[in-house]
Image (cartoon, rainbow, N blue to C red; front, side, top):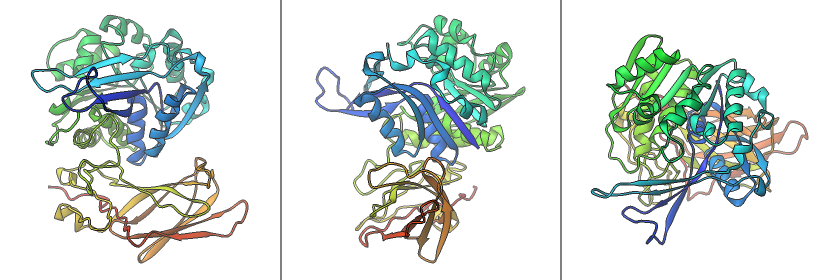
Length: 449
């Protein structure tokens, strides 16, 4: 299952809870774009996903791509000269009632506004099982809107779009008039409830809203996100509903992109609409427990980590080495019991997991990026051997230098070795430090209640 996503991504500056920009001394910085973040979530859940874009070759543009690479997402970026366009920014203030949260958009004149179809590898779009973009890309310029339409029409697989409507970018009427020309090739539309009401100028219950939108614009799928109230879907005349999973919310910034990414991953994997929506709702619930638009690897409390869609364990060795090893729960979000704590086992840290999860010993999927001493991908054709307590496996890297293999869920990861199939170099082996026992405790499937 392959997903190609294309569009813009901004850098989001966020104040600490209860602070305003005019008095704040510290801010948090995150990458924030539905096209990029949904692709990252899909990749972390097992899809072969790539994000395409055109960005300014500036520290801000490189910072955004570096964060996406930290999450294991493959990117193909056309780098524009700094004078050709800038990098978009968002500024978010989190308010506590009676003060409201505020989001300021600064995304005019970005490099993506100058994009043309020739800036993207159209062959990858035509080979993908699904392509995905967002309505906010069309808001940047006429060129961006035309490019989005051309890529969608060239895709033989599932064609999906997120409405991604923000009043700070354009009005609902302007968004509707622009996007109406792009809707024809779209089969699957994602939208927030508020965004759909503004752009389509419709009212009524969520069930009525998805049915009306699907009927008026001939979408085969419509997925309407309702934040903490769950998600409503429409597929070929049938309505589907999934309640939200109850969680203690920390930050809602990443829940929409998490749901979109999980639903895309499931649908391209052949799952039913009901299954895809349940996974999407679970991913959104987990994203609400973490800070930022794209959940980071670290948790809120020292030594512990709330459930991430893909916790990361870094193993540094000499010569060719693992830049990171990523373990994730392949069936994350299928049931409430999967909402637990995933902890990297460092000295003095105790894992806290539901008994139903820890009792399982099924395999998990490990994704690794092999890079050289300069931090560059070694590319494809490199044979990789991974060894742990009681077993080992052999795989070969893909063209982007990544490799995936299965390993037992609760085992200490010992070492990896690599041999280039083209140069015949001697394998390099390295053990993890004895004081750092890295474990991924998730089973491949949580038991159902």
